[in-house]
Image 1: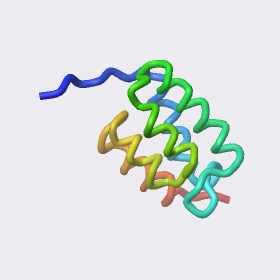
Image 2 (image 1 turned 60 degrees about the vertical axis):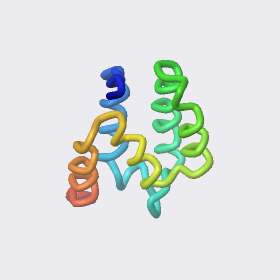
Image 3 (image 1 turned 135 degrees about the vertical axis):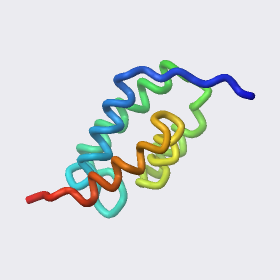
Length: 94
């Protein structure tokens, strides 16, 4: 069995903020400029804590789609990420 990685709390909180505020940070399943700023902060923190994720981070920076972000999110916060997506997409917004 592999060793379970430990993630900083801030990374999980920022991921939650990015996903729950879907309509604010995404446009057409890709991050917009505000979402890009938040995503870059998350990726910077991940690179600092876990440099072994460099290749995946490179891929996300090249293609910042919701799908790629969720694949990384599953590693960090687990299956909860899908609950956050439902909450973000189905939330009432103005």
